[in-house]
Image (cartoon, rainbow, N blue to C red):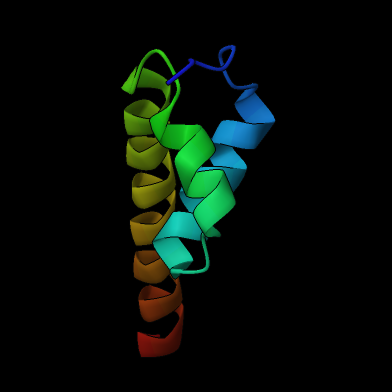
Length: 65
């Protein structure tokens, strides 16, 4: 199994967002798992989750008045 070159930042965030929503294609998932390091995906995942939670808190505070 050959490793692919490191993923670009935009591709990492796109993969994390697709996986978060559950629409990650099998082809992209295979590419992601062939990357030399999982660290960019972990960091991007944490950033996306923090932003997601912040948006939910903001919406709930706006609605609650």
